[in-house]
Length: 253
Image (tube, rainbow, N blue to C red; front, top):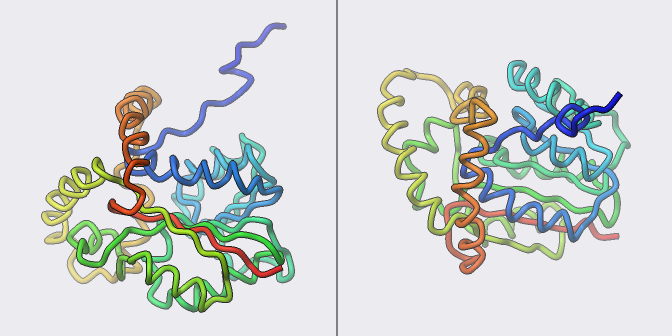
């Protein structure tokens, strides 16, 4: 029986505009590193994880039950594994070529402790890749509503990674110029939402972060991808200017 390519290969989950800008940087790093095994910490609804699962023997962990359910469906179809757990609950001693955490560190009050724990999952010579929102002076309603404790400068991320024992830190700032417009819209929307959240803690606000502002259909996903593509190329012209940053660092061999 002849099957169509869409039936044989499930489509990739759609990405939001900011995620496309981020993935433009991350995908080029992954092309260079070519990991065999990968662990993603805080995989959310699995949009990045589904892509990573086609590049490496992939494990993702996601503590939020609702996001985990979506991620499980998306990532297992691509051959990966997803656990409803924290990285600290993984079996001790198992290490990976790549550990990644996208838009996670800013949600953790003890970011130094988190990085120290994440590094334990890396083999000697392995790489940590992470993304965070950039520049504390841009901290606004979007950050507060998402449960962020902070934003980071390139210098701050470099210092945190080196304190965790990592070396050869490389930083790419992304999001110019589209990221500025996207954040302006989110700040206006989230400024109104903050009036309704009461006394929720950053941890409580974080639980729903991975489920907000996600494309709801394949059609909207295709439209977003096409509309964002020119800006993915444009942001490469100014890799030190933008609204987010991606870092890659190495565990000494």
